[in-house]
Length: 207
Image (cartoon, rainbow, N blue to C red; front, side, top):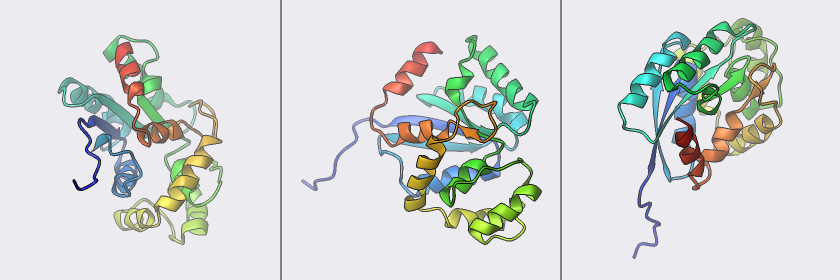
């Protein structure tokens, strides 16, 4: 006996990421092995929020996953594109409000979650130009525009220690997607850190 615990059956999840920043971030968390080994997580870069509903439907219909989720930002009020994404997913399943169980968000943007690895900061805008000063202050990355080399440098700064800090800080944020500086991302992270997969069964019962 090697002493290694054997996972009899992994749960297969697919997370559709809005764009390259979300994809790179989730890839980094996956790389850090901060999630329970019970889960096999596949990531998809949707290439923009307009593609999210179609990518979601495609991955859901191919039947390869126990659950398909979405990770995106809300952008700024009145959240028209974000609300349309939710509406399309609701209509696809024919279940009012089911998108609230399937979409994990950052308001005003995904950077609101990422920056919590480094400090408890409330961003005032989704605009990268506005946030670049804050990003430089806490990461040392100058004039952040989410270019590939900048994203790579940023992801290298994320580690297991500041991951735990991020979860604690995001847990203190409101979880209503219409509140500024809000997120439900901590809920997903808490699910993925736990071997109990009942949450997936409960969602599937509603679909």
